[in-house]
Length: 269
Length: 331
Image 1 (tube, each protein chain N blue to C red):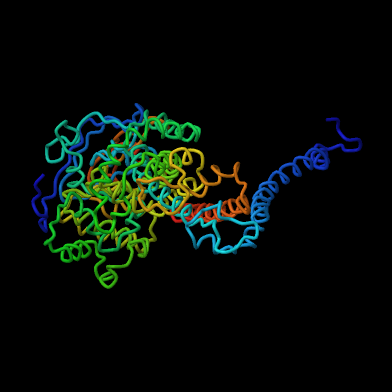
Image 2 (cartoon, one colour):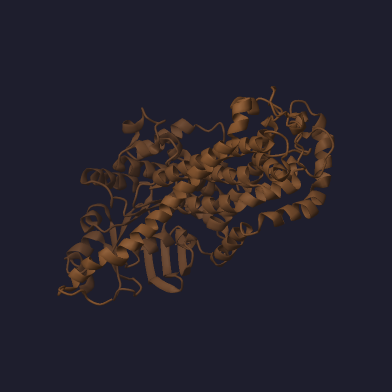
C-alpha cells in the first residue's frame, strides 16, 4: 500500500448516507437514513438517548461493523465511493475518517508525543527520516494544545487534565490528516470551560475538515453546527429514524416537524 | 420451624432464629476457613520438624552449597561434609520451569489473543472450554504420553540441538552431550503443556478487561487488528501477563509425577545440558522417599520439601500480587 505523505491541508471529503439501516444481532438500531454531509461544515446529530445517533456516526467510518453481531445495509458514500463496497479497505477508510470518542482515550502507556504520533506509526506510514517533531507540533497546535504541553511532551498522556486529554485525542486524530472528523459527544465528560475550548476548536478545524458531531447538548449544536439533523424513535426499542435535517438556525427557530419542536423545546427526550 | 412463643411480629422471629441455625452455619463456615490456615501452617511445621535432625546435623546452608547427593556416604554420626547436596535439584526445578515458561507464555498469550480478539463469536466458548480441559488431564497421563509419544517425536530435534548448538560458545554447555530422551528438555515440554491452561485463562481475563474505548481508538486511527492489539491491548496487559506467567511458574515448580516420569532421575550432580537426565526437587522426593534407609536420608528429603514449599509459596504470592495489582490499575 503506497501512501502519499500527509499534506498540511488535506481535502475535506463529503459523505452521503444512502438508505442506511444499521443492526445489532438483526435488530435495527437506526433505519432508512438518507443524509448528505457537506465538506467544511459542522453537521450535528441530535436526538434522545437510544435514537441511534451514535450508531449512525459509527457507520460513517465502519467502526459499527467491529462490534460482534453488527450489520449494515445501504450505503455510506465517501466522496462517491461506498465504504461498504466489497473492494473497500476498512483500514484505509478509518485513516481517512478520524474519530474522537465520548471519553478521552489517550493510550495510557504512551507519552503525549507518542500519543499524537500513534496513528502515523501504523502501517509504517511515517518513514524513519520523517519530521516527527514538526508533525506532532503541527497537530498539537491545530488542537490548541501546543502551548500547554510543549514542555511535557514526554509526560504520560494520561497525566493531562480531562479537557487536555480530549484535545490530545483530537490532535491524534488530526495528525493522520483525515478528510472527515467524527466526534461522538466529545464534551460529555468535560467541564464547561474545556467544553467551550473544544467548541472553539471545532469552529476552527471545520475550515479544513468535514466535521460530524453527535451531541446531547442542544445549545452546543446551536453554537457549533452549520447543519443539524434530528433523529428519534417512535418508541423505546424501535429503530431511530431521521426526522428532519436543515440549517441549524432554521431547525431551532422554525422546525417543520412537531416532534422536532417537542424535542428542542424540552417536551421529550 | 414453629414460631417461638411470645413473638408476635415476623421480624422478632427472624432475629430469634439467629440464635439457632444461623449460629451453626456461622461456626461451620468459620471453622472451614480456619482449617485452610491450619493445614498450611501444620504442613510447614511438620516439614521442619521432620527435617530437624538433618538440619541440626549438617546446617541448612550446606544443603544448597553442594550438588552432590550420595546417601551411601552418609554415616550415623553425620560427619561433614554433607553428602546430601541439593543444588542440582534446585537447578533442575529452575531449568525445567524456565523451559516451560519460555515455551508456554508466548503460546498462551497468542491463544488468549485469538480467543478474545480474533476468533468468531460462536467459536470462543467451546475453544476456551477445550483449553481449560487440558488442565483436567491427570498428571500421570501426561507422564505416559511424555515417555511414549513426546520423547520419540522430540528425538530428531534433540539430536539436532546437540549437533549444532552443543559446540557453540557460551551456550554450548546447555546443549552439550547426547540427547538421552528422558531429560530436562522433555520435562520442560510436558510442563509447558501442563501450565498452558492456567496462563491462558488468566491472560484471557486480563485481555477482556481492556476497555473497548481503547481498542476502538486504535481502530479509528486506521489500525489493523494486529496493530490494535499491539497498540491498545498488550501495553495495558503487560503486568497481567507477567502475573499469569508467574502463577504458571508456581504450577511448574511443584509439578511432580509427570516430571519424575520423563526427567531421568539422575541425582549425582548438576548436569548442565538440558538434553541430559536430571532431577527436580519434587521428583527426587517422589522417587526416593519409599527407599530411604541411609541415616538422615529421609530427613534430607524433608529439607528438599521445605525449600520447595518456600519457593512455591513465594512464587505464588508474587504472582497473585501482580495479577491483583493489574486489576486495580485497569479499574
